[in-house]
Length: 323
Image (cartoon, rainbow, N blue to C red):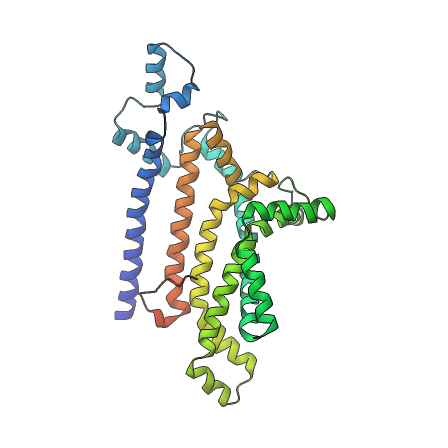
């Protein structure tokens, strides 16, 4: 019973921390528009000169004449009910824009996550289990991949697989499951390339550490098949740092999608953020920034909750293992 109570206290503490952090972050996101160069009114008027009466009307329409805490509370109350305001560029509700764009970003992040986990864990395990040329080749390849920025990967992949070989499209989201996967393949690979190398290196390090433990040597001495030893005693115990890093990677990809979506003409949240920043459409920028923060924090909360289940040795006080 005490164990259940301990887990409940841990979960409750993490949830309270999540809520408090979200409140603080939401205030920073909302206040950012007031610390940016220029006034919000200049964003709305696009630099046009207007009479004092017209300026006062604009300030009243967007509640800019109210104190900042009042503006924040009005905005937060709307966010909690799904009202993110109205886009200045598209002249429609921000919530509708986000709902139309979110599925593409989720597809892209999900596709890239599958590629990262499968390739990263596979290459990392091979490097740990096959010392020598295989290990060296994988480590060199992972180093090159980890050092390749997304925009460089976009250029290289497009030049080879889209222009030269004409295997994949470079524009549009696609329709239907198969067509969408086809259109998102190059963007997902470009998004995943650098983090595949990072996960491969962490997987290799974690598995090498487990291979040197005493219980693995005992299992081998007892005649347990090598595949069983690797699966039950090595890879399973190495999943802790792999899971932590995967969670951080997935959370970070919501930011990196801006480059990839814009380059491949995908109508997702990333490309919408770039358009909103260019047009100074601050309600859209605020909404997307808040969603990215929420996604990052929720994913990390899930990792915190799952990590002790994967690696019971960590207990309630898991430690972040980074490369």
